[in-house]
Amino acid sequence: MSPRPGIDRLQLLQSAAELADQGGLHAVTLAALAGKLGVRSPSLYNHVEGLSGLHAALTLHGLQTLHEQMLKAVAGRSGEDALRFVCLTYVDFARSHPGLYEAALQPLRPDQQETQRVGNQIVELLLRILTPYQLSEPEALHTVRTLRSLCHGFSSLERSGQFALDLDLDDSLNFMIRIFIDGLHQQNSQR
Image (cartoon, rainbow, N blue to C red):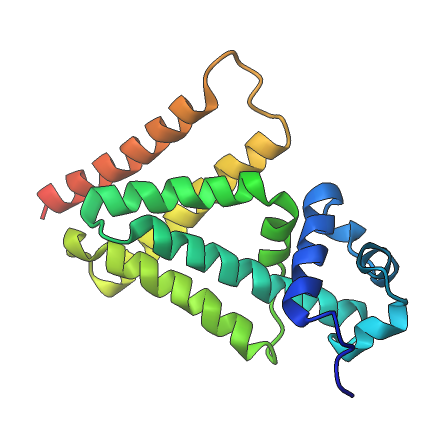
């Protein structure tokens, strides 16, 4: 079947992302999306294979958007500067697009090869940023996991309102990033 004129896949995904950002991933239903786009629900089947297909497409869209923003953030930067900006971009993405970020974190099925490819591109970008630290391959991969855990943990705690103390959140974020980078330098100096 060919897609209905006037609605393209990108428009559909952007509208779904808006629904997710407003109400969480659970708010992205075929009926809600159809209503937002001004079409009947069956029309969406020209673009996605049901609700699970829509959520899978949104996962891919979320990872692609995050990857694009990270690439822009580190363009022309290297070393600590690139590392700092990629962390800030990750947290900013989670802040600005909470539902799309939630979608990007959904478990992948084995048949989602394009989504796995984009996820691997994010890992590869982070590995390139870490090159100046001369880490072994296992160390570099552990570092990517650590970095992701720090940024995700910060984002999750912030989103759920767990940072109730009267401290600036961006100061805390920058402190966390600085401690992480200092730890990488310390690890290098012990070699």
